[in-house]
Image (cartoon, rainbow, N blue to C red; front, side, top):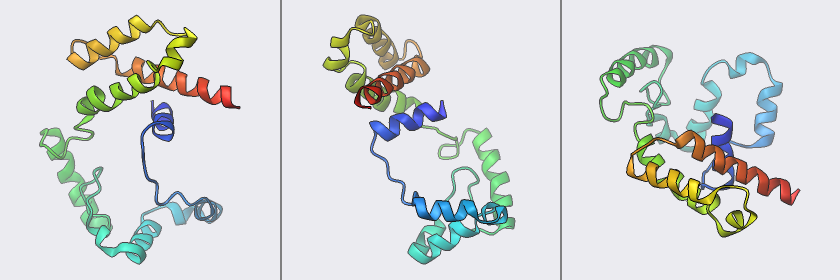
Length: 162
């Protein structure tokens, strides 16, 4: 579901990718593999452009972005224990249910149930509305299906433009 998720973010949700500089990425990818074998480039960029961000915690390890290998290893173990204990703030993707019931369902309304989409008659609108109602109320989990419907519609729109 990663690629379809990226499609939603590329087309519907507002996101920012400050390090998505095509020339920079090209240079890094043409360089030796050792350049990409750690966090050195990442830390150097942050240090040069906003050192205070080196204190921001990595949600995967619990370590600040500027941490060295030893501190990162220790905090990663601690982070794993806290995540397994379901401690708030350490559960990976702890807000997915909230995102599903609000943002994704709003995107379904905006994209799949948009009047132009409905007018094409490709999807069974009443069935989609029922899925949304069930998901909003928590009766049934339809996240994968609803996300797929959004992706299919976005791809259809893209194909119509090209």
